[in-house]
Length: 91
Image (cartoon, rainbow, N blue to C red; front, side):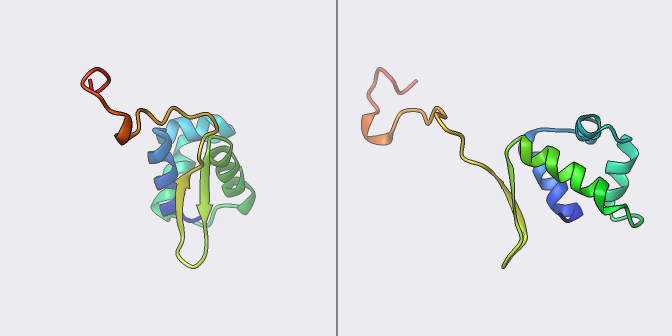
């Protein structure tokens, strides 16, 4: 997981640096430094961040272009389909 992917995943989940740090028991400064590209953090700590983000629904793509998206949720409310809109449910 790259620093940019971590920032993007947090953004998709609506988490702050402090939120992510609290989920894995690390200092907020660690998250800030990692996502800013400072230092060479231990891979185990990066994996802990990634695991927490994955558990919340983040899916990391590595090839061919690195990225992140949220997993599709089962039984998610998709709203009303375009063809089913009426003046009554279009509010």
